[in-house]
Image (tube, rainbow, N blue to C red; front, side):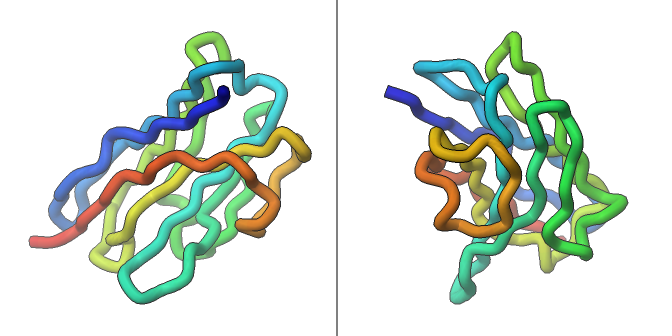
Length: 125
């Protein structure tokens, strides 16, 4: 069974940085794209960005361009989301997601059938 596990969230002051990890157990990640999503209290889950099989990132949220970077270590079975210059509006539960049906990047939640449990990111002074 394929499982995704996020880690690395926490409380950080505005302007700070965090690196989230998404570890895949059960099978490798190297054949598919990985999406990063976030969900703030009272809001719908939104796409942040996606990293393709070749390591190219597609941004789904303009507000994170220039601040967030995704990378992947296919040997280690882990995808990372580096978040710099964090703002209070980045506060949310962050999820990584993958699909066995599609290997391409998608902004749509319904295109991913595997999700991690989420990791809380809180940006506050």
